[in-house]
Length: 110
Image (cartoon, rainbow, N blue to C red; front, side):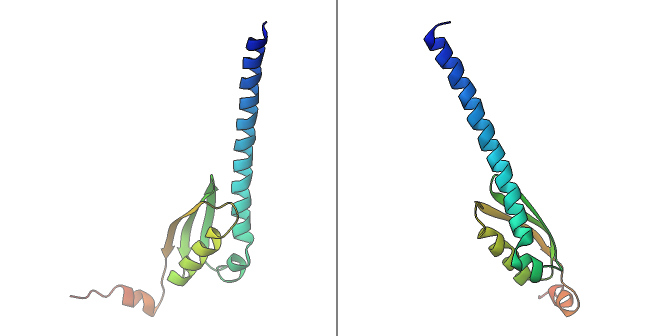
């Protein structure tokens, strides 16, 4: 086997190794982001009664589930967007209003 052939094989092996490290790092970073969001002071204290699911993929966080009002929605998205490693936030949260707010939201103005 000549030196060029060995160098080519070595380059491919190193490339696969670097790619696997990058994928492992990205996966670990996503898990770290999810944990940081769920363990944050804001989520534990102000959003504890809301049903928010946090899922991260390649640094983009998707928030889904329900919150009590628009303030909680904003609080959740702002909290997550400021976490290290977050590249973006996809807000799929649904506001579930109760009592008078729900009645007001259903009024049709003609």
